[in-house]
Length: 413
Image 1 (tube, rainbow, N blue to C red):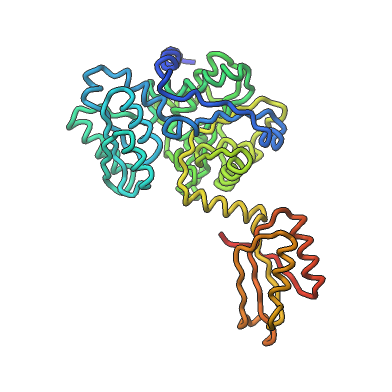
Image 2 (cartoon, rainbow, N blue to C red):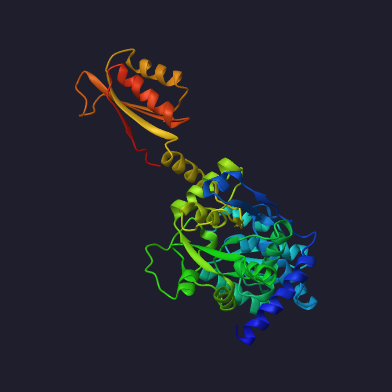
């Protein structure tokens, strides 16, 4: 390791120790929860570091507070400013209030109203400007220069990194000897801080970063290769960063053992299972670490594994779609199609069989003019909730036993 990088890492580690004290009473010391569900699925001992339960719903308040509280008093009095449409906005707003400073947050005009209201609830002055983040960032920098405010970077700052690194110290207090810690990577502030905190204490612990396949910049950095993008969108919007920072890139290269990629299907499944099995609400960027475990990309059999759930600020419309999509994929919701005689009583026979099987009907569609059915019959489609695959197969046998042909069709979410 080159001398200047060693010096940087040592300096940030001292800040992490300081930040750990400064943050007492300001942030939650979030739980490290051992999960039976994901331990059984991976044949490992899996622990979840629940930063979704943090103040403002993500880890961001840690770094923001440590940065702001260490500004000269004159700078704090002039106020701070940030550009963000997500968790950084709320983290800076909350941190500024707790540090006795004033915050302005510039957000794109299309930022979700829930995030705008949440940021304002922490006494921040929210300015809506531009249609994309780059517009908001440009405006924030203009305001910073005009008003003498300090710009709070989301990740590429020693104090920000140090604040996030306190998560590593908390993990070690609760689990002194983890084999693997899995951390989301966007700009790299979170994984840089955790890596420094962990490696200073347990050099044998492996730090694995996870990125969305749509934004693989840290993966490319680590692997020394460039990937062709298939899309520039992901449900893990909190880590949708085109490239890590200068400081964080150096730390990732030096201390992170590996970086893997996960697609949105694995992230979606992780969000669903965390909510259903663990009663844990996680956003895409937070659930991606569990998505990595479910993807099969990591062999963690028999190991003590910590997955950092970095945030829980998920859009409820997206969450609803994920629940519907995963229910369909797992055949919890299916469409049963058959042809019935077009006469009174025919439909009731099918519904009776569904009632006996204790299946909840979501939708019923009958079509007398379906060209696939003879003139004296009608097509019938019933969308139902299925408690288990065995019950579905029993129902199909019973319907066929009544003389009907049955098809199970894919439901489009």
